Length: 231
Image 1 (cartoon, rainbow, N blue to C red):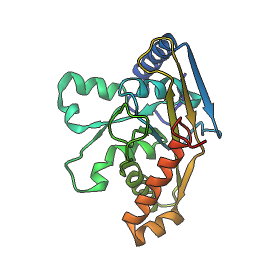
Image 2: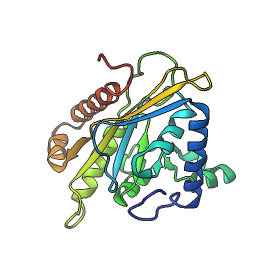
Image 3: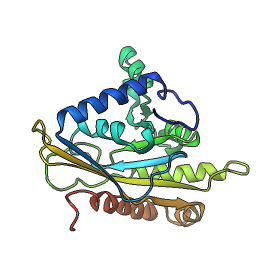
């Protein structure tokens, strides 16, 4: 049963049903699903998750079905999809978060993400931005890094904030043959990358530099958890 700090939209019966169906689909399609945790994943509190994206359909299902402690994962979708009556209702019920990419304000861009993190949610992203079939990862985009520092900035605006950091969990998803029924797959949850209010002070001196550094750190964490790892 999923556990939540607070009840958020999309963290009720609809998500529990989605999680159940995802597990049926995953263990029905693959002969073996191996889940590895390099370090304990927190059972509560806000988390950002960065995963590689080699299959547009399967990758979200993998996270929904296998995330430790059965925590609900909130994904991003373009805000325009939420304006489509039926589609918007389904996305909201599933806990998907709208992202307005047309805005030039990071605070506006990540508004729903920051609200969810503030309530202790898990926000799961695919920094490559699209799925791929090549053996190597695509370049990671900086959205998750900007979101991390925006969240820390939000913490400084609170009186006596309960939290002083944000954890980013790199996840590697590896399929032996994603197009073959009854093949095998491995999902590995890596060592958390923790950013604190002290990191925010350095970020404020040179935002773009520290965003790029964090993106590189996240990419290395994901890569070390997949077959792309040099090991």
